[in-house]
Image (tube, rainbow, N blue to C red):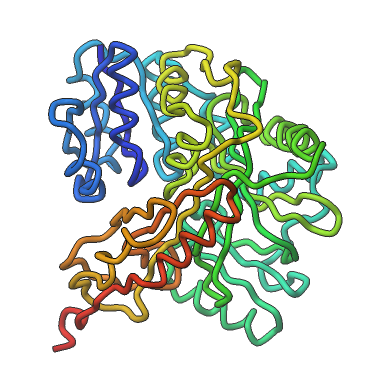
Length: 404
């Protein structure tokens, strides 16, 4: 039988295909651009994945492609962009999956915020109008992904500039622009798995973002060492947040800020963590978490909901650093990759881009050319190792097309 994936994250496709095979199924990837997965496709064993080239933004074409798959048993979606279409299709085809209405709520950050405020789980509310927000503030796309369409503004001048940039359309919004007060404190993400309303906190990732107004993610590490009792407290909080938002099954990547008043939600992504978060989960937890993705797609309670975790985590803890160019241009390669083997922590390179790619935006994750991953006994040590190794890698950039 076949399990279909309506697009996927840039990393983890091989693990997903192998998990499907272990469950006795064949994974078929429906994609509009297979080059997005070139690193995974170049390294995975032959014959473990079927690829269906189709315009995944065209519902009619996707339905036709799904109809052509033999014995379709489940539909996987682990992206934000395709979460609503995937939920609609699963319901239409009678396949296991979340309630499409719940998925639509989770794709609207402002609606989720209002729900949490009404439930007493958030101290803040979105502004009635983006231009009337209390400063400092964050302006963002209600359905944005990968830190695109996010502006941190500290004064009226920055607010006007952000509103003008958003109105100019240079950053295409997937939803609508809204604003809420800025949350002071360190950023984390809770990595969770839910089934029929029950939620399990698998661990917490640290998050580091740039200091520029155009916020982009710089690094992450898993699992964060929490003080005694704080894991249980945070587990209760994130379970209440997901319940109030309507998420009752599957993975969730819940970003929050540790404020002076306790955790405050940034956003909920109803999927496994992106970049190399899922890889970090697999290594640190000592299990392939993609097995849970496959089990959920088949309508089965994931084994990960009940199985023992490596706790306290004995390692390896994992950290990764995103590598950006200093300027837009055409990527010609990297300098310093040959030195990674000299660093502690089994430093590895995961390319996101390939030579010849044009990199126009370096203010968000679209500018990431690759990631350096490292391991250690703790997330803090892994972060230090990954950062030190990543400083030796430099993207080499040529001119943009048409610039001579």
